[in-house]
Length: 290
Image: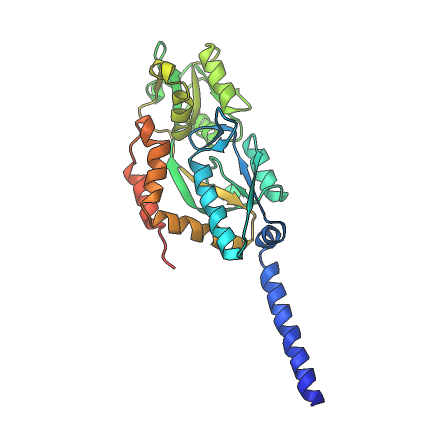
């Protein structure tokens, strides 16, 4: 009998150890389960992907996708309620460091996947594909790459767009003055005041910036071809494979339904931006089954 109880206690100890190690395997899911709180980092001025609307609400294409992730994780963890907390993050370094330091669980904005960034953070499945472009005023248009020579271009430092502009200038021997701005709104402000000839960013964000004020949308033009290829994904803590699986499971389930196309239409289609074949293919290729 004594041997039976010893064996039973040993079995329970083993089971508790296994359960504890499984829980500890994902510190992010562990924290979410204990606190009932899901922390989303977002870019406050990058419509239509993530921004604060006129009512003060955090919204956008990326935010809709992250809310779906939060809902899926709440169900998987068996929580009756999950509070979603939003933290504004400005600048790519701020966004990356917030993930590294554990200030947010996920960054739901406009971040391009790069290998150098993957040295510091992990990424979910891709969420969008766009390309760098230059926005200018129709009164002094920058329609092609050749028009960049001898121009002043506003750009957020540390972004892939800045790298692209430097490469374009170097390869073509252009004289391009890059004017660094802290936020996307700052770039638009300089363009509108005539202090720069163009404002460079990802095409998806430039569309949102222009159509925030439909009354002046026709005053702008954009380079006819993209300057780069920009695959977006959400940043998450590096090495937390169980949390990454949970986020990817949520996104894949969304990509398997028509709802993702309704979300796209709500944030891009209404601005006259049809669903491109490459984004449609991204949805289909990542609609991974269980």
